[in-house]
Amino acid sequence: MSMPLSVVPFKNEEKGFNRRGGRPRMKSDYLKSPDIIRVVDITKGIPRPEKHVAEWIFSLQGEPTDIVFRTLDGFFPQRISFKSLLQDGVDGNLSESERKAKFLENLLLSIEDMDSTLRYVGLKIYILDYLKSQNHPKTEMFSHVMPHRLEMPWRTINNHIDCGVFTMRRMETYMGGSMNEFKVGFKKESPAQDDQLAKLRTKYLYKIITREYNVHKDYVLQMVDEFHKIPARQRSELLSIAKEQIHTRLDDFS
Image 1: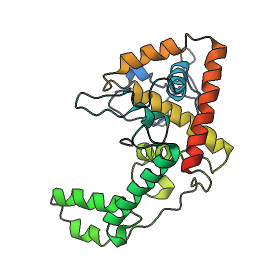
Image 2: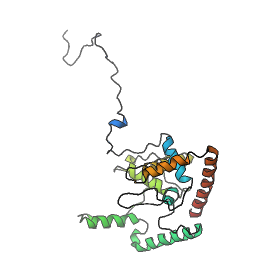
Image 3: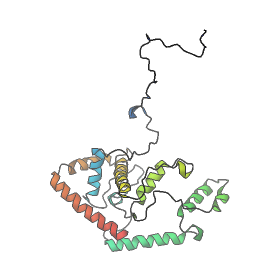
Image 4: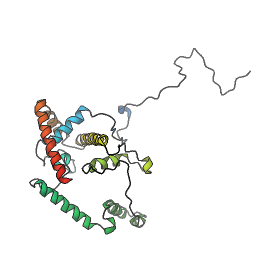
């Protein structure tokens, strides 16, 4: 009987033949383009360099107004921006209650400046301003679109302090499409989600501080090394005191 042309006979003498097919090989990071945006993996642990930078920032060493990040074009958030939720531009000599009052005052002024229909969705007015500046043909149509608040499964009820981490995570994971395609990776509000947020806070902080755009990068890494030369017990005490102070500050703002 003749053999169909579509059938390839198996020869035992062929070397390296794998009946199951070859396993796909993953490329190393060195072979991947640095221009491809890759989402931070929250399933992996925190490497020692990331942990060390976070410990130094959250140890409350130095002054709140210290500059730990600066770009060549003059952008320089203060250290307090990295270790708490307080806004830039708030007088460092104010008490915690005065800081909170100032923050709420600025927030209310911002809301009053918005159109009443945009009172709770300030982002829309900024999008409209951008579309107008670009003479986009759908600017008028977009101005009549009513915003809807998404009911995301990872929304929280009791967490009022991690909005920045949530925002960065959504920005790096949203690729367009429907909610079914929106893979953020967050668990529902729980201690497990708290662990994810703590991990992301450390990883984002490290990525920002060590970015090549930060002209203070080498200085910061030097200070991190100096901090970790402190005896372990003394360093642990400093971190414990700092943790209490940060929690007190966050309680005042929650």
